[in-house]
Amino acid sequence: TGSELTRGTLLRCWPETLTEAKLNSDNGYCEVGENVVTGLPELKMYVLRGTFPAGLHIFRFRPVRNPLQPTDTMGHFSFGTYTDLHQYPKHKVLDQSKDIPVPRVLQLLPLTGLVEAPDYERP
Image (cartoon, rainbow, N blue to C red):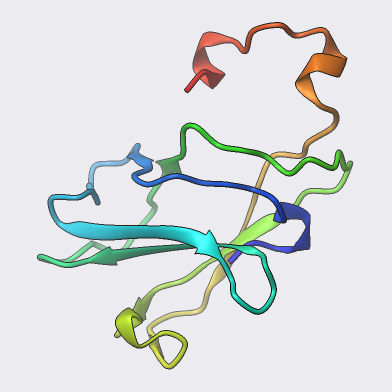
């Protein structure tokens, strides 16, 4: 779940997995949306077949819609590992969640004079 500063963020499934262990539609399920109570963005990724090893995992989401309000403070997403996620919010917590910072939106791209995003930022 995202923090208040991520309100308005839109992620799309599937993220690109940038580490050795892969999680994709072949072995998992991905769901994005907004929390029905808070309206904050939520991301749920399930492993349906096999296991997903412990360790560092890097996911890149493209394309993304960032929050519309510029800020000089970083928001974050809370990531954790759970079992029985299909019973959310009555799922079981497997480990302590970690807050992962997200880039700040300093101003809207048209205001920066940037007509096209650089290659590494394009969808």
